[in-house]
Length: 148
Image 1 (tube, rainbow, N blue to C red):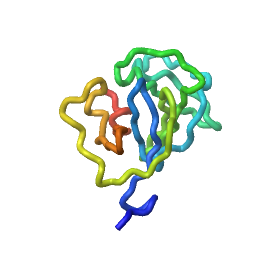
Image 2: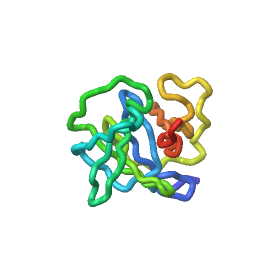
Image 3: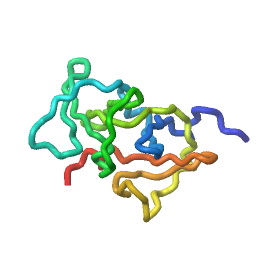
Image 4: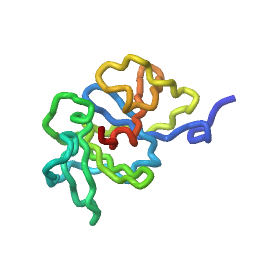
């Protein structure tokens, strides 16, 4: 028996990149995907908060995922995107190196995050999915916006 695309056993995700790694977020949390725009710096915020921007009349905080994951900085280029996220009562943008695909991934393929995760701290992750040779890491959006 084959599973149809978009069945209730699938989760539809947006795939994006930070460095050479691919990450996933359920599309239900994505409001929009934007090209880089001017960001207004806010003094006294965490280093990973790049500032705020005006997105269609809403002032939205912008998180640099490279900085949040303690990765080296990189200049923004034509591939750089801002994923505008809405989860619970939070709304924020995340700067990513590129947004690649929208995929339907089988929920039963989501595995717990391994105890040892190179690079990104495990607390920011909700699980991993392996499809063929590709490995996607599901992000925990609530933890990304938590302050320590």
